[in-house]
Amino acid sequence: MLARLKKTARLIALLLALPVGALVAFAVYVVISIATYEQADDGVHMASKQAYLQTLAAAAKPKNAPDVVIILFDDLGHGDVGFMGSRMIATPHMDALAKNAVVMENYYAPSPVCSPSRAAMLTGRLPSRNLLTAVPFPSGHFVDRINRLFGNPVRLPREEIILADVLKASGYHTAMVGKWHMGDHDKSIPTEFGFETFFGTYHSNDMNPFHLVEGTPAQGEKIAVAAPVDQTQLNGLYAAKSEGFIAAAPKDQPMFLYLAHNFPHVPLHVAPHEHGRSDAGLYGDVVQGLDDTVGRVVAALKKRGTLDNTLLIITSDNGPWWQGKGVGRGRKGQSFEGGVHVPFIAHWPAQLAPRRSPALAMGTDLLPTILAELNLPAPDDRLLDGRNLASSLRGGASPHDVVYYYGAGTLMAVRDAKYKYRDAKPVVYATDPVSIPIWPKKGPWLHDLTSDPDESYDISMRHPEVAARLKAALDARNQEMAANPRGWK
Image (cartoon, rainbow, N blue to C red; front, side, top):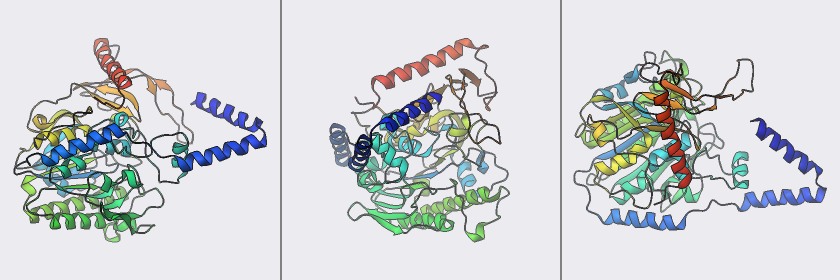
């Protein structure tokens, strides 16, 4: 932090020392750079993506293919739902599903912040692979302009293959409802990534302008609800659009719905009749409203007649932010357990018996798992960081020896079934009255997550051989990523 401040001070001093003409020229350069910047896509892998999708389109369609529904919450904590122990927030619809589903007790979001986590979940590739290691801001926002000035990624690259691309090519009817947050202009919007219909928002509900867009690949995406959206009606809108898609989906064609909520990300809003429903205040009211949308989706699937043969996945993009209950230490934005250890349900009665699984799993596993369940090949031009969870969902062991914790593009920690090794990294510290925190470098630390899920005690001196083994795994992954950051074959 101090080094960055010194570098910024030197740059300011240099600019102040320049003559007026040079400053004007520099300002013109900045304006032109921002105005003309467009993130480049990889033409070679764009072509291989299209070839792969054409192969899927020409292949024999899976028989009795399940409907697939993914419901993703924004900043929902591990302990904010009844099936994971909440006593203050009632989530009867999710709890009922959990009783007849696989609950993964050691499931991890791929990132402690939303956009990298969502991109990794849909692509099966860690944020460093797909370049979306930070949250994109609306086009024209100050942060967006800074990213453009320095040539940073501002959207998910078009050469990435997401789950909707795969399912659409395989004969699924596809739709997305809710928060995209992986790009807001024509090259990286939902209908350019395999979704046949989209209704929702490109950004978080705390970003402006917050409007809702709707569209199809043929018609494009246009503003459907102008800013400022009445967010007290947001859950109801998303549930209604989801119900409508499920009801209209052809009976002779499997369908894929991705319902990506904006809540319980701040600002928090509920409809007037939902106030005071929860013992956990407004946050709890919001979560109970989200549970209501789950009930409406389940009812729509029952009416369609496909609930038992629907792979219904419910999870969160990262841990809780200002409110909510995570796991032990840390919150959103941090690679401690609270930032990434999130709830997960896989409900598919036709295939999966109810159980609670301790197997390690991560959001990057969803794409390779669904490929395997549908007997579809993986793309052969890129590495997938995720693993097939088919065996784990049926009571088997995890396909992971270890899972990796990334913060932005930095590998922060690694864990196996019992231990977590955190590399020597900055840790945020601030006293309550102080607005500016410090980030002292601490560690390396070794935690026994079985007996110490709160990551309270470093036991690296007691188990140096475990710390050395996990450090070697961390170092090996860093070397692999440095040698092939995009994971091209």
